[in-house]
Length: 449
Figure (spheres, rainbow, N blue to C red):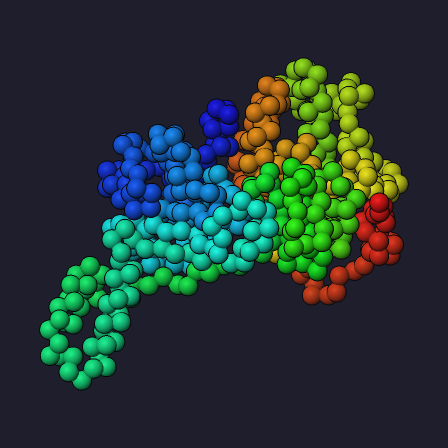
């Protein structure tokens, strides 16, 4: 994993905390939330304030995420909005924290100038010992305040000010006036500079959770389902009709189709489908060659083709299915029929332009683990777990590729692969020439078992 850290592919974009003032604020917040402190002279934090170094020193990497349900957080700076979220238990947590910071950026900037802001992502569930409890999570409320209670005091002062204005004899209430003066010393003039955070309440209906070996919960769809990475054992009495494991390819494909969650890469607007297919095929060649112990250094396009030809007998079915599709995309072959039984099927898809795009791309990454770029971009936790067991040659190739092709322009790479180009004409979309494709799916009717 060291090579990933050195290339900025792991623990990248963390915030470095090294000033005595910030460390003191962090410790006050840490004490406030957990009763613990750190003696480290410097460390790095993610968007939630979690630090790998502090977790190591405390011997507890869940010190801000006990039970993996209601994540606590420490904000030292609004710059944390660009940091990743490590050890995530829910796919929605980072977006919730980022949106909270963006929605309250001016207020949080002022508050963190003198103190840390500590808080918690609160939902109605405190224990998920049973899978069914996950369905009780409907919304997440962000509760936050400084360690000195600035927001709490400001709200109290604001109520006292309203009382002072409303009561006729308030000028003679020495106790009320004294309390107002005392609170004003802590909060400043709340009438001119209100210290208040916007309501931070977020829906959490469709999400991934690390609990129970990894579950994708799609509740808010016309055809809801749960997809279980570790299998369906133990997943009883769930309030959905359909629970699939990753091996039930036909059913997952049908679920995608019924809910219009995916689109074929070759039909995506503004996408260089041939280039993406070739890159996916390259990753598959690399996996096969690395498994055979071959040298993978200094590979260019010519070397990659030569490597594929020399190891054709080692290449899995995924490669051959993608190759047939690539031939069609480049006008050199007939339209291939790739059913959901074909190992290449999910490699030919990406998420459609819906509110569940990121979650679907995350699931597709788990269904297509040989596509290491999608795996890294869309499901980093799984990427890191799989990376540990790869042959050294594959580790080196993938780390170098991601540093060279992804790190230099992350936003551009994401937009090119997963963005959706709008139709600028304003006209209705033109249906595919083959109406059968439109009626039964990108590759034909999906087989049903």
